[in-house]
Image 1: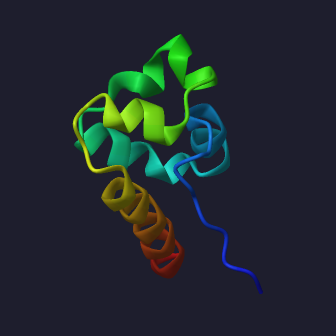
Image 2: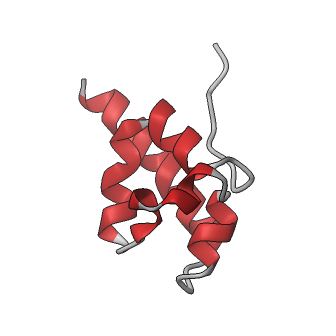
Length: 73
């Protein structure tokens, strides 16, 4: 079984639609991109870097959160 992974090149809306559980991670980091139209075309890298957050660490948090939620079920 292949482990799915979020990458920084993925579109914000695409990620939220596919993995709604990561909304919590965006909110915890006060990333409001999730509610604006830019989320339809911005990548995670573009949206997160505008908030001064390390993109690679943020993407790792997203992926870790997905795995955590899977284990909780």
